Length: 76
Image (cartoon, rainbow, N blue to C red; front, side, top):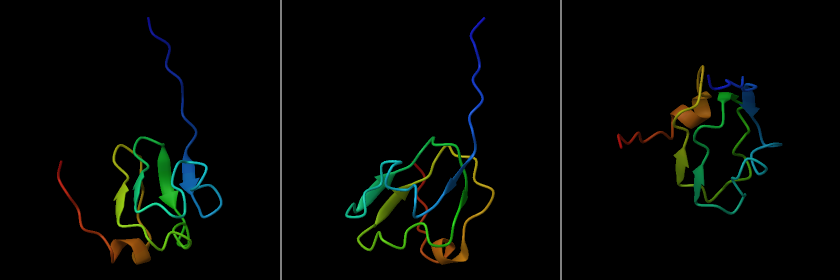
């Protein structure tokens, strides 16, 4: 039988977003499958060039209102 490892839920914030692979000068960030459960309102405050954000395969409970206003969902 294969072992199952529990993942620790992640709250995405301006303090950990770069270490998760989303540099401040990126125009695109792939944050898929990172066990993100929540996003702080100011998580993207330093990402002024960001145009595309992949949050697929996370366990998001909700999105901050400032992000919801910018959403353009794509079905891939």
